[in-house]
Length: 98
Image (tube, rainbow, N blue to C red; front, side, top):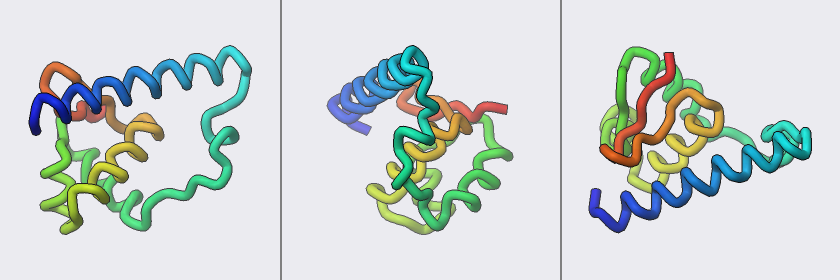
């Protein structure tokens, strides 16, 4: 990934953390605030796939699920929202939460 991509992903992660904090202060669970959100059809398969790993990346998701970059990014965002992975800005990789 380019350094610009890493900067953007870091900022998105910061925004997500601030949003979650705000929703916690307002006592609104994240899932209720986004009631129209539905997971990607490959989300369940992605969850099973990452459980066996320590760290994952966009390219890992692309290769294993045979999807493009945009869809892999969407799946990783959903995995992050569901707290299955967390972004590591220093490496640009997602750590799998065990």
